[in-house]
Length: 125
Image (cartoon, helix red, strand yellow):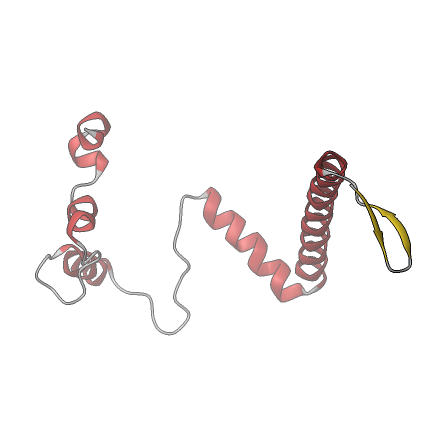
């Protein structure tokens, strides 16, 4: 599109010229996102491994994960006995209790009926 206005003659490019710029900007955004993620991971690794407390926590967490422990240990009190843990689990699975693990409708069913109880194929059906 050619336009003549105050100050001279101007050429306004059509949408075809914008397509190449849009592809270039899309690629640039992807590159910037990858670089930002890499920098964030590098900063996290440096901060984690420089501080001895963070380093110890990291390796303890990796060891717990390798041992199959998924929950963080509570640091706010003594370790519960196996009976206390069983009672706590029973309260979490009691549908009428205030502390029920999943107060929603379908989530109640999924929280109580675990795949290992029914079998995965029946649970997914």
